[in-house]
Length: 478
Image (cartoon, rainbow, N blue to C red):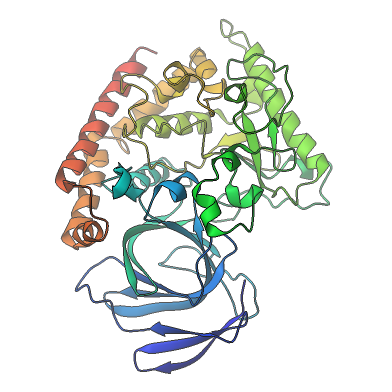
């Protein structure tokens, strides 16, 4: 983090001075030359090369209706691991900074005050014919659907982005998932809270790849273009492993073997997201590991032919049902096995969510048939390095879970997930992007792959309509 101070205004410019060095950041305050658009226009200016980490000092200015509405010092870095390697259109993580070299909570674009934000770009590389989301809507639609269920989802807004006077296209500005009263609202857990009841929460865990910047920090930027092994570099410092394999059998081999070892596909690792791995105590690690193991053991041992359940003593079943529904309706092939968040508040049960990372959802990867649950991923992609934990196939065997799923689904279909609402959200979002010229500008910038945008929107709507109908028929049998 760097100390930045606004010095003075000139005609069309504002100058910031950053304490890391004596260089001044000169920021244009002239409106963007894109004509009238309802999309906020974000301009990032920095004197330094943006790295994977650490963040470098910059200034974020925002124009709305061609008027300058926001100007603030930030730190900025690239984000993403697989997406960073595969895409020419990079995503960014930013922090808002104050003038005392500290993070500062700020409201941006009307979102609740915080310091951590994300500028998410769709994965695009014409030289390899890589295009994950031609509609640009995967995250936006999924997060809005999840929020309509009464669940917290990262707030999102479409913007257009310029970095150091170079137009970057359409991005989704969103909240980073973290513990916060307006985000993942769980109790703060400090290092000195190691006994009951405080030790019971809050925790945030993540089932995911390991991030290159966490396991191999401060490398040259080019290092992160090919650091695939860092995706699976688990250790006891940053994670713990389930005691059961993806089939629900006890694991009889050691944890934390080298990346992509022969048995990795059998393992499920939980990353410490909050408290962070360098802050969580051994007592807290033991508590949350034991809690997860007790839940898993109960889920495996419960007799589903009876009415008694013990696994529900450990989890908020409604949150599991909602998490299942959002992953299934969005066809999220990363769901359950990657970018999967869990959280546990103090004195409460384990909850799934929030939903995260839908860039290869909506049947864009064609790994699981549209006529099956994504939760059955393991039946179609054997020995992927990251497989679906046994939880979900096991829950689909439970009449209690299936009945709760049926009730919730049929209720949602009457309102939040009606065809009119879901398909209307897609069409209204597409119309907004088209009518403001944002789609045309984005694909002028990111060219080389032909994109028939109306066809992409139609394809997304057709997928969702078919998926809604398939789930209707499936749950009707429960």
